[in-house]
Length: 233
Image (cartoon, rainbow, N blue to C red; front, side, top):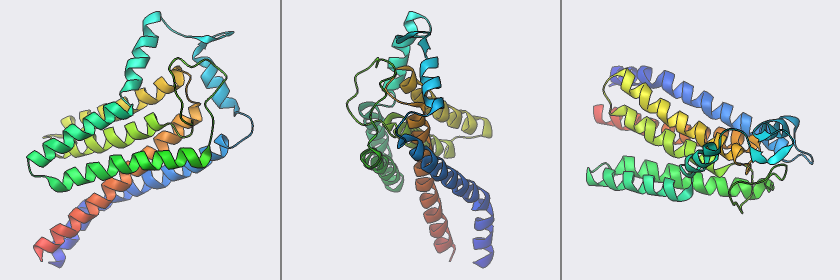
């Protein structure tokens, strides 16, 4: 039993260490960005990046061809509550149908917990939306952290990491995880392009989202490891 437990520990030691580093880095980054959000005046990099997405001297006109604004609206919807709820519900129902209740519960806790955490953080920091440029979509909630960026990270990274476990070959696994990260990044960039978030809001959303997703994955991995040791015993 001890040999089996040691073998299992050696197999998960590096992934667990990596997850711990991601969690620590995400928390550190979020705390640093929270200081930026609470400052009385916008940080220089916030204003410079936000203005970089606008025509010089025209804060109401975004850069790029006319179709790019519509594309960014479509991309940002991938991080909306309705789309993420639809994707999450469909995945949970499928997992229940194939009798993977534990995995379904993990996804529910990760996504629902991320939604609650995002709302609490917004209220705690109480940062208004940027007024430096015009908003290309209507938003009424608080700005920090970006809920779209955070919940995209939580949802797509959780689903991507779970899907990768069932795919054959390293290439397929890397591809799925790459798509999850790419979608998360594009959603965050779209929020800045549309003028509804400061860049620090999006960075903080990514930090919190990555940390929360890794924490949920780490808890699930450790529970799986304990179950495997128990089965061996």
